[in-house]
Image (cartoon, rainbow, N blue to C red; front, side):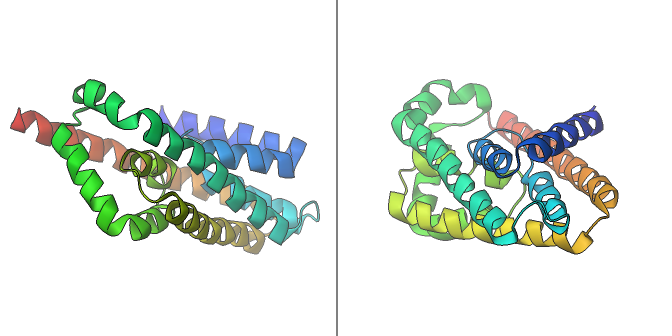
Length: 203
């Protein structure tokens, strides 16, 4: 099931970027950082493949990818600021999120917000969803933007560079990425299971 989903995403991501170029990269990276389950581990290496093919420019791809990540993250951050805390206080129990969990998150972001946002941009899955809790905790907006952009820039540069280095071997890249994403999704499922089990024991 998970493998089929990953293969489906690979097909549509490569189709959109191949058809629209920079505009597709911008749209997909924006959606990814706003919370959509669209792996940038596919977007940026395929863009690197197109750079080698002479269809795109390396630094323009990196700048567009990182900027789109920042914009999408701002949308998610503002969602957390404007309605996140009240919504989670009301409905969070159904996601096993307590008021105590929210208070802990607030204190964490006040003390370690900059490093949390920066390093989270370098972790698959977590990089997609970190902006919303940063907004819920009302992290300083200027610092949020700076560290989000720096983390996104490093991530985007790395995966675009990997795509370039792999050159014309896109099929090899695709297979490795599919295996990697399958592994990450499996870990995420285990973490969710552990979190749920831990909270059910407390209740």
